Image 1 (tube, rainbow, N blue to C red):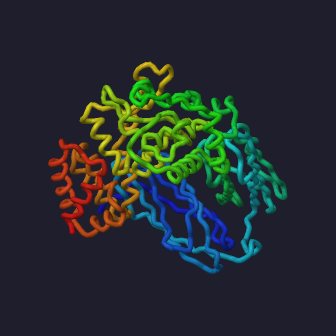
Image 2 (image 1 turned 90 degrees about the vertical axis):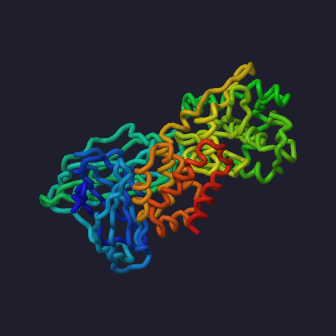
Image 3 (image 1 turned 120 degrees about the vertical axis):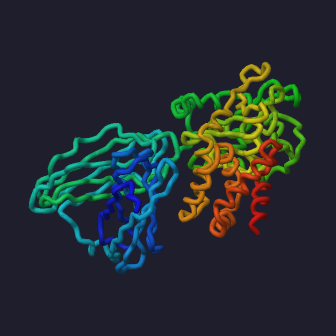
Length: 515
């Protein structure tokens, strides 16, 4: 019998909940094993209950460390008495999944708030529902002792969304006397980023020498609209990434000579077209999606590049995929969003396979008109279109460069290939695991453990290219050892051959073996 690698306890902050209201499941994980944990997945076996927010896991949770995690759960709209089971899975740093952690709760859902019994500590949390990026706002916590004896406060923790920072806060009271109230005001600075989710306050206290918890959560949306900000604010918001707004050239002199035109962004002209498209957006990503959709709907695409001047491209009816990337990047710059052209460079030509990148929320997003993609860089790495780029970078002496022209003299770009290749296996694994049902993920881990790193990356590229349903059916119906042998055979045959632009070709070959 295998000893469980952690001691896990489950708590619930209330057993009586208003219909459609929220409550909290608190899971304490004590790592008593031999390796660190990197994730925890909680499920609820009753479909009437919905998890609204999963806590951020403090990866890695090392041996001997302990953490308390809070899940926010929405109760059913229909009153009644419900039993819910909550299985928990832990994922260790070797990507092994540990099961067997389980607890059951009985939840009574009532129609009116007045039917919910109250303890001696009344708690209220007040805050705005929406704030703008970069602004200061207050979160006010009221604690009121409605009992007859003093309440001792042992701890108050404020769980904020990523990027929110506490600028100032009141002192935590040690105790609250009977019929007394205490107000705590937290002054919070919002990041220059879009965020949405729940802010949670956990108050641990002693009532009649018994330790209890009160938890409250409130929804918050932080909007960030750089097109409404001035240059000083944009500099503050983006730091060194402001360069990709300020630099008005899109590509370097090599492009200028090849296409006989100038890649200069006239902000006034481009902004006049872009601003109406993005005005109602809440983030750079929403703005990017609006501009991307407009370009796709507004132009017919071909393969002939007539100009690299975004103002001239704007006036055309038909554009190349490269012109689409140039126009998108120019329009994004014009509304104050860091954007750049990324391309392959073979030592001579730096116009190959152009993409666009724009910056949002601490990461780069990729736009690929040829393949109809807009999403995060990590998501792009897991598409069927990246493996070819990977092969050229690792076997073909190519570089992936971000165009950074300032003088239009020669090649002016920076190598960002290492950024794409860093921790590539982990990035792929994260995306592939999303496709696998929890039951089948251990098979994936076991299969990869028998391969070297190059085989692992090739395997993950294939699995990332597969439709989710087909992938799960294959691993459900066939032995992972047989699938592994087939993939390794494919790798040995194709590893030194030019890979296709669409890596799904290899998935189709693999799928054909098991039909």
